[in-house]
Amino acid sequence: MRKISTAAALLILMSAVLFASTVQADDWFESEPGYYTLLDENGSELTVMAREISVDDEYVSGDNKHYVVTRVDRKNKKAYARYQGQITLPVMVPDLYMTAVQQDDGAILLYCTHNSESYVPTDGTESIEGNGGIIDVAKTLEENLKKKGIDAVFSDEKHDPHDAGAYRRSRQTAIRLIKENMPVKAVFDIHRDAVPKSHYIANVKGQDIAKIRIVIGRRNQNRKANEELAYKIKSVADKAYPGLIKDIFMGRGSYNQELSPRSLLFEVGTFENSKEAAQKSTGYLADVIQKTLYGGTEQDKSEERDADRKERKGNEEDREKNRAAPLGREIDQEDRDSGGGRGILWLFVAAAIAAAVFLLISMGGRELKSKFKGSGEELSSFLGRKKRKK
Image 1 (cartoon, rainbow, N blue to C red):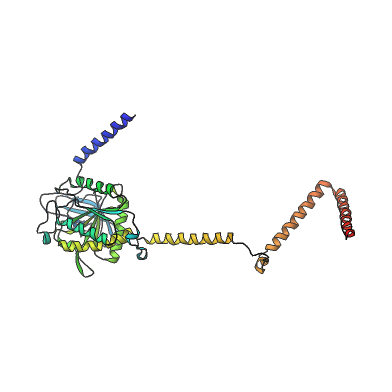
Image 2: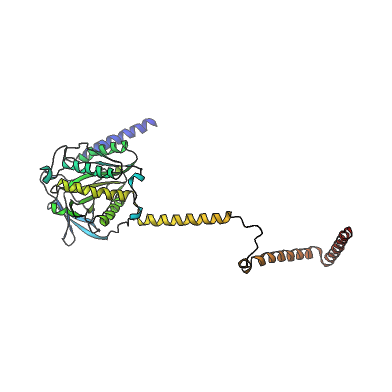
């Protein structure tokens, strides 16, 4: 049996290695620059993205409209999506926000799958092999999280070249980070987009910053949990820093998000944004992450209130049960009005009648009469003797 199990394990491992070398990449790579345009059914532009779009991919716009891709024109790099309805984001509760220092229950891990990605206005080029501007943006996010007392860990491990194998290589980095920093609160892969700057410009609190897109992989078992986290992050950001979170895209890939139930990919600006604008964005993102991961939802708060009420009620009932009645306390008017005393009296009367009926049936009338007569005489004699003793 052990030999069979070992052979099966080796077969699975070999299959995984072979599959890993042929699996389709999570991202889209072409020698010529370009991007896909996502349109609604009426042909109106929803967004653009420098990644391949597939049928059944999903998109949530900045104003929380939900779309599902129904058709893709790969030749012209266009995709068409059907409107599904408005997404209702969870209502986050500000008064439940707590500092991360009080919630020491896991680290936030950061890494960059495409560590060569850069910002042209600052870095002078869109790609610097091994040490792109995205590394500085990820480091700034790490620093901003640490300022809030969060245990943040960033790995600058290199995963070049920027090709179809990058996610396979970064997967090893993510696994190592998780093993070395248990327990883990969340895992974030930091990127920048490659579309025109006009799609990522924002002004928050008077500062010119770069918008942030959240990307979720559809092909992993943690998709639902990661989606819920993304919705919570957008809910907090929409209220605190409107315009910070650009949108949410659910792509066909996995993006290594099967490794953690709280794993997301953030695209912080695009190659035409300045690196400084992207770094400013991470300050707001760090605040949103803190409030999201260490806060609560309206449902959480309601459940907490219900639990508190039940606990208080239970404590009051226990105190009432265990409270000793004052000695010599008489039944008050309310008890008498409620029939408490009369109930006890009627109980004795009913018992007496039942006993009499039983005796009458079992002994017959004459025998019962003689018994009562004898009892009366004995009682008189007993009382008489008592009197004489005095």
